[in-house]
Image (cartoon, rainbow, N blue to C red):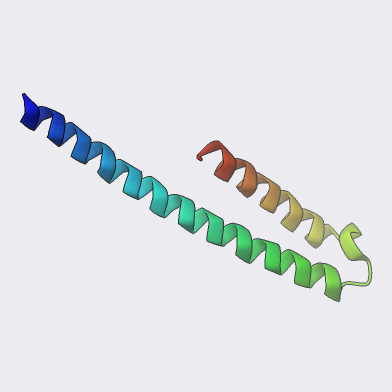
Length: 71
């Protein structure tokens, strides 16, 4: 009986490692996208009214929302 519990615990821990790796990857994507958005905003005279900047911002919002839901 204890073996079954240990095995279930090991499987759960393995799932958590996958989740943690996925969260780290997602967090890095957020940072990269945030950096790109900041560079585009500073380089563009129109600031945040540019269509490309708006699309990047929306993509970043979606990624942050997905990340927070998976915490």
